[in-house]
Length: 250
Ligand code: FES
Image 1 (cartoon, helix red, strand yellow):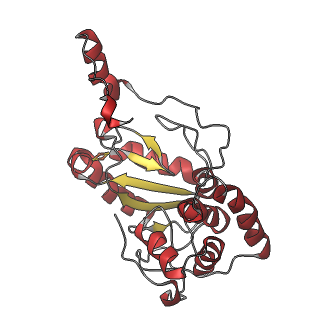
Image 2 (tube, helix red, strand yellow):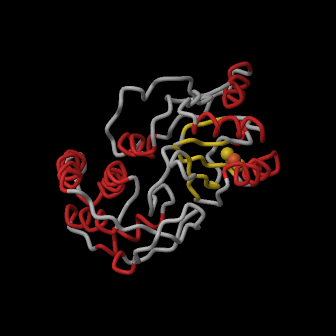
Image 3 (cartoon, helix red, strand yellow):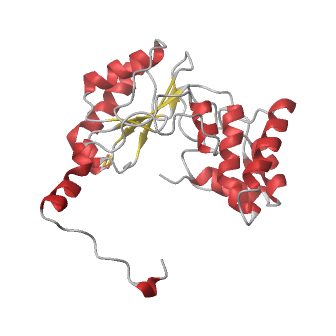
């Protein structure tokens, strides 16, 4: 869910407490090495676009890959690299919840509590994980392994209730399977997602999302039977989508 934009100049320094809510932010400066890596890798990203400002979101992921979150210092660096104001960069980084505003655990565990998942068990899973982990929404376990958050629909309703770990799918979860999942994450034994690539840490995933593939993009199963039911029915009935009209220009 989008957060309210906030000027980077207004971001306060706070003492981090894993039980604090989403309003808590951190403001560590980027190290010189991290700054250099963002500059070097960021230059490759910027070169992919006709307009440099189009590289804004990948660059924010690059900062997150270095710091584990997007700090005001990172916002200033991105603004400088793209010739934007810190207010413009801050507005984007605070709008999307994928960008963290304080250090995130190795695994961001997102429980879908949107309508379908919620009524099929997502609400119960989220409540049980809060109790099991001893954290609230956006809270991180003291070992730094898991950050728990509730998330909106991830277009996987055919596998409800869904839990995402660093944006990989764990389908058809139950209270018990979700508890076992977080226990294994905390024990350093991450299970394979139901679909998609093997789990990486949150910082490693941020670098992939910045556009630097790790060689596992096509690993693991993709669409499962439930998602393909409509396609199979269409094939059985010899149905297909209408052809594009020429005047659409696509
Ligand atoms: S409602 Fe949970 S994935 Fe759509």
